[in-house]
Length: 123
Image (cartoon, rainbow, N blue to C red; front, side):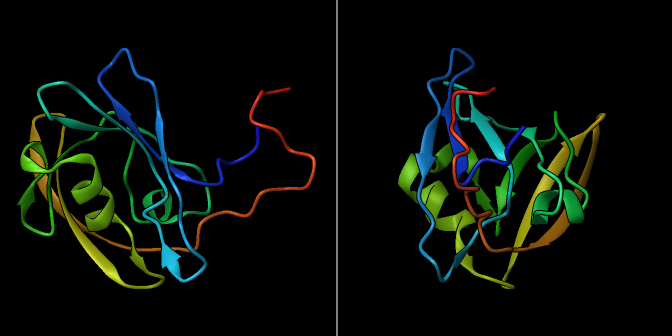
């Protein structure tokens, strides 16, 4: 299964994923995220070799804060802007996992490159 070339943000659980493009100089936390209508943000997947996987995020984690900002108060553009940044730059996340709240600093990685001939239709 090819690694997605972009960080995807979902909108609700009946999601139509919205993709966020990453310019060459922009880094990504490297996670597929889903946001519910109430604004709660969850990690849906963490592809290997990207920041989220390397720094310990896991599917099912709920992200409460991004650099101290409540994700429920952020619109899609604001959330994208908070998660994207220079490759190697840190983003501080406050996460809930199994009823425990903890903080993790993720250092953004370059977005994965598309493999020629790899489509998004799944083989």
